[in-house]
Amino acid sequence: MSVHYTDPFATPEGERSPVRRLRGRLPSAVTLWTAPGPAGLTVSSTLIADGDPAHVFGLLDPESDLFEALVEHEVFGVVQLASGDRQLADRFAGLMPAPGGLFAGGGWRETPYGPRPEHERPWAGCRLVGTRPAGWAVLVEGVLAEVEVAEVEPLVHYRGRYRSVD
Image (tube, rainbow, N blue to C red; front, side, top):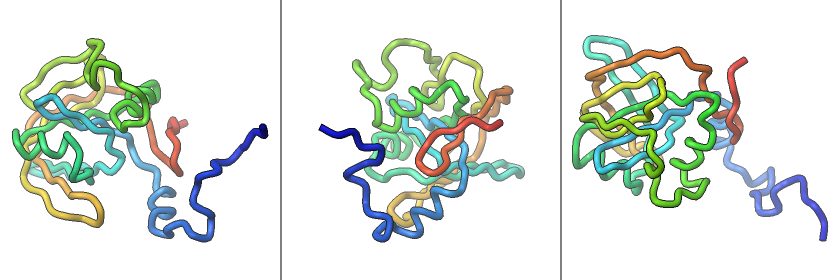
């Protein structure tokens, strides 16, 4: 048996999508979106637009439980994850087992916009404005109804891995 330092199932370099490779080279904040139900999903395609009212945009999987709950309840929450939240991000991305469900184990506070972690993190409660197809995802637009700011070392996604900002 030999040890591989690369993924033997990875798409060969010459066959990889240039669009996906470009997207992977754009560092992005890792957020957790939640909705009543409860439902949640790790999202690294979140954009906040200041204004009156302020808006949030995100690309979601149209087949995710979160997207269904968000459309049904027309509200959702967005939490900025911190550098110590890697396992939480993996759990909500479906990359780590979640015995008892995504929200099992406590540490959650209920809000009208869906559950949010009890620990202090930047958070926004949002009202759904609309959705539309965008590539293989759905572009979700919301209005920020409540905002709480906290100082955390952000978790960033870059080239397929989580990173901290130094």
